[in-house]
Length: 138
Image (tube, rainbow, N blue to C red; front, side):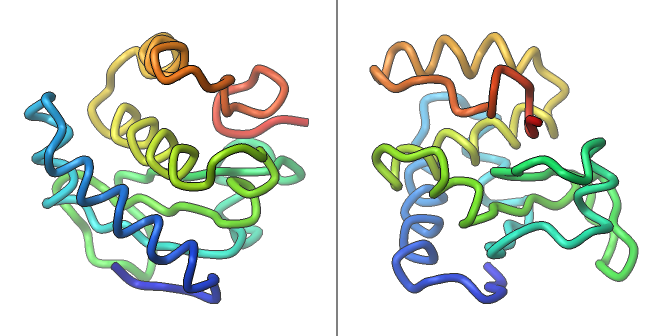
């Protein structure tokens, strides 16, 4: 897991989330946790924010099937952003894990918004998309 300017606490929570995903009951999540490169980064760079569709939004995570400057991966690449996840408040580990699963949903092409809402409700935590938008908010 490559790290770019994040706290050691956030790095540990990302590692924990990947470990939890490897134990998930959903076989696709277990597969993704092993096969998809996950990068921990403080914030998206401008190119990532533009590619996500909202240059001025707060991002928790980003999935891309291809990204210039990175080797092509069969299932894409995921970035988790410490700044955005921390701004959500609440339990950091739960937020990191929920964001990781959300990005897996993007990669899997599932109805991730509905699935994420159900998963958050089951965990007793509020939705993590900023102001009701998927992935970024204004």
